[in-house]
Every structure is written in structure tokens, then in C-alpha cells.
Image (tube, rainbow, N blue to C red):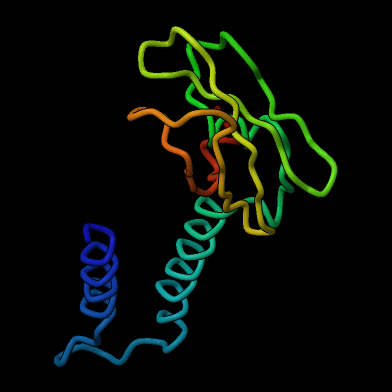
Length: 139
């Protein structure tokens, strides 16, 4: 919701800022290219930040960061690739006392669906889903 308002008001601000002054001389029409280019760059960077996998490729470390919950670098650093395009990833339970295993399938966009191998609990449901974002690659 915030993003939609920010984008809409930002575009309106550009239109108002670049509108010709009724009493002044006419502006060069190329001035309108600057806000269009800025909006286009922001849109491309936003899409890349949300779904970087088609560009960067999917690796086990980014997938583990997205599926699992880390404990300050303790535990598994990477999901293991399995035959058939599936992955095996780990996640701590709520008390960080044990680790549960998920079998994960990811698509070309980096969005994944995980199924728990074992008995589900309140903190570890049978199914999880999500998408790898740029944060998962950076941190």
C-alpha cells in the first residue's frame, strides 16, 4: 500500500515539477525523459530486488536463507541438491532446540514450495512456500 502511494504521488510530483510555467518560456520536451528514465530504473531495480533468481541463478545458500531460519551463522549454510531438481533444506524449530528437514521444489523465478519430512507441529507446518529475494543473496 505504501509503495503504491509513493509511486503514484512521486509520478504526480514529477508531472507537476516539469509542467511548463504558464507565464514563462516553453520548456524543451526532452526534460520529460528524465522522470520517465528514473521511474523505469526504479521499476527495473524493484523487480530485480524482488525476483533476482532469473538473473543470478538459484543456489543452495540463497534458498537455505529463504527457507530456513538462521541462528547467527550456526547450522547448515546451504540446501543440498537432490535428483529431479528438488532440494533438501533445514529449519530450526521455535525453541532452536532441533532441526526439521523440508523437501523443496523451486521454479525459475526463485519461488519455492516446501513439504516437511516428518510430523508437523504448530511452528513447523507440513507445507511452506515463499520466494528468494535479493536479501537472501546478499546476507
